[in-house]
Image (cartoon, rainbow, N blue to C red; front, side, top):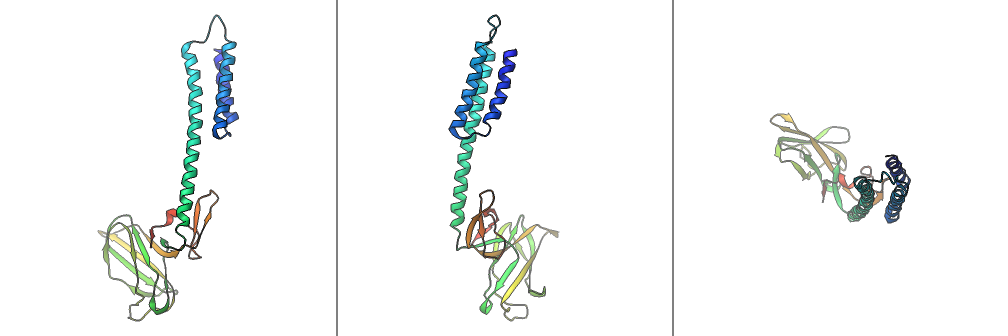
Length: 226
């Protein structure tokens, strides 16, 4: 039993020693360490009380298990690298395109031309109320309530205010109230942004530069590509 304790201790030491290793060389080093420990145990075992087959099988199983874990880690690292490359390629493909991301801003340009906005509902609502306010917080347009299914729905304001005139150029904000059977429903407002470029965060994941409309966002923040 003392020999078994020696090799079990060696197993832990080998794992710790090679924990930082990566790639095929790390797996081979780990296998070599286990085999060296196993051979040493066989050479030093008591001839009157040799290692039983079950114990030998257990030691070999440990070698295969740790080697398999190392191989699995190598495979996962490869998959992660491919996913990162795919995300970066997807992000760069969005440069120059308009997207809907969480936000409540609407821009009005010449002749009442406006940027689109959107609403994301987790569940369907039978009463959705949209209100648009100017920079001072004054309501300039209120829409009649309507029903809306769950999901993402884009909208475009024609720039006309409640008094029938065209809204002056500038930035406006939109708010929404969604109800189902009189109960408030979770909703997310979305505003339009143009993807200007791509950068990487500390983890190496791509961030989309929206040209100052908001802070850089992840790919997961994009609700719709326009």
